Image (cartoon, rainbow, N blue to C red; front, side, top):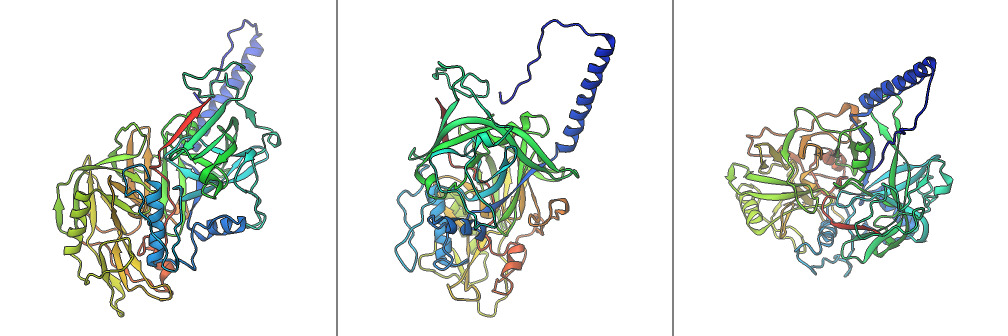
Length: 525
């Protein structure tokens, strides 16, 4: 249990006036609670940024940390850029029966970039007065932690980054901070833990990947600042339990989670669960995936009545897993049946050999452009664009989900260009072969995805996610009966930004999203 309300049963006596006063106070708070619930139940939000965006790169450069992306070595849209992103995917899924040991090096040198798997970050405020942190978002783990009382942490101070200074969390500097004792209901100790000193701190250790990367420290409680987007006074503060991360190891020291990590998993200690436990939102959240490295995370968003939906499969790992009953590529239909993890932390969608083989051959048979082999390209099926060609139109890709709703990959291709070229010479179907099925980030672009844990439902709907949330406009999408995707303009230097806004280059403008797959272990001691 995250928080509890204890009522005293001790005897007391009140006069009628005192009882009336107490009743009035109770009624006032009851009405206030109902009003707050009504106002806030829809959405409490955070904005977030893609790991390979210029904003994140500026931060890591200023820290002297290993770069997550070097535009001079791997410009947007080049083979080197896509290989760097695929390297991220492969490293992210190590230990999950992927092609272990596969390496991709840059064309101008034998370099590889290792990524733990975090693609997206949000600025969050904690405490009173508030302290600002730039945290990685992760639906594959549960605990929220920030650097604090640091004994071994990544560098975090940065006065040059848009006049902001990142700092370690200081509990004593916040009037609303409270230590969680090991005897507290909010200390989620396991059955083997012994709390010999009831006033001692509740300690934790979070292990990531194979255990070479971890965060450890103590649990504290403080206020998390959120935005309620549909009321005039839109700042909301909620008490939340999180980790005061004293010791970080492994990749956490190398910029992958430079200022903390927000767990968005399914357990009762994750941020969505804690927010829902306060009774002011439903146990659901949404991610809207824009095409400019920017997106929105909305807690309590259950979606809309006209969204498409399918059931979430219950699984022991807590992944967001759905069932596919049919796949349509252009005018070709297959009764392929399989399950897939919805993982926007994986850049490229990937499928097992059977599904992958059917998808690529069906797509290839309906493309009008001639095929082309591109040395070093991570994609198998690429097509030549003529120097005078201004647009392409490719076969549509639909997945029929359990229950009958169709999920369309709105923008399944990427454009490939030379490092110094103003326009691409090719486009590729941006899927890869995995040992399990993943609907990745590139298939989620241009849609609002709803993770309704309360109803165990995944929802989706096309949206222009880059506009103000109160004026969301549906993104263009063909009717389910159309065998082709919308016409996609060939990007150039002059139209690249507008092209991305309609999703022409799915990975050229890689989109902000969540991390849904990386399995992480949490233990308390």
